[in-house]
Length: 430
Image 1: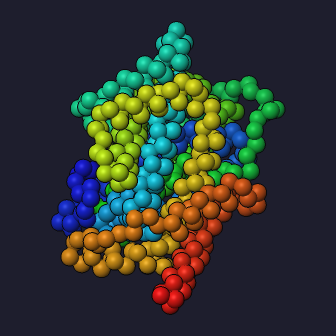
Image 2: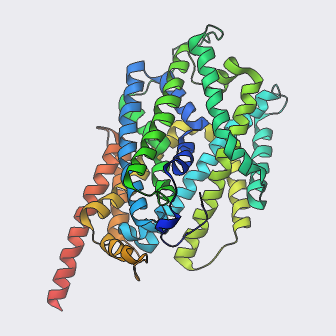
Image 3: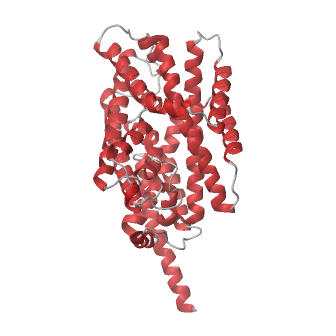
């Protein structure tokens, strides 16, 4: 797939690719250790029925949003950041979304680097301290991404099969044989999650993939391909990886992923984790740097150099992992599950229901161009997103991620209606 083509324009039909080409890349977003880690948290903190319910409902919400936004990307041939300009947010709002995504990916970089460092430390029998390992691994990967390293392309191609093979081996050793015994961990003092909290965690663990889906599906040829891509990602990432992690965590009586991997696969498994984490984290840092560069250019016209930005973000992400961001994994997913869905809700509402700004985008698509003008700041969209996030974080009733999504959709429609009335009144007075 040509990831670097058409960054500021539509992908022409003759440049669209096959279903499999898009599906493999998209599945890679949820075929990562963080998904296995999430499943282990659910399995260790919830009853089996509650954990599976959280996976089912969370996957349904993720699937609906991902398909909707991915369909828009396919229809218009545009990336998510460009779509935001004509889906209510305007130039400034789309830049702010880019910053949110960049910060979120930086958080993922810190978490993945911490997992990397934990594996590295364990592989060397703890002769290498976690903080030293986190510093070395974070800075090493930062330099690779900043200055280029062709081996990372090779790593990306084979890391997904290696990781899937690792999960399959762990599942076999744990669930199909008696080779791995449960850890003697007391249930007393363990945090118990509600189904509602579990649903928010599931959505939070995958929602950035929804936001980034148009970046891939703009290369898709038709809507059925987008549906197939979404379904394949859910089946592999949510049902298989998360589902297996739930059963494994419950059998071993622990949510500690490193303990699970060590018990089931030994040192070889730890090196497989290190290898697969490389594949995820180079993309996190790369996309985070691009998000910051694009946001700064949109707001100020200043074009930052890629290499210094990457180095600065890499140092920041490494610092987050050293300071213990991995200990706040659940809090991080909760936050993502509440603050990102409102932005997606606003864009879906604008494109499919209101069509105030997106209509120009649809019309210009007939000749493959883009609208000549766009709103500089979409205040209704920005305010509705903030409203949705606030309600999701503070409303005690219901599922936080659903509350934030619905509130943002309703808030956007209401604010746009009020804006129209104010404009009409001013026009009449004039």
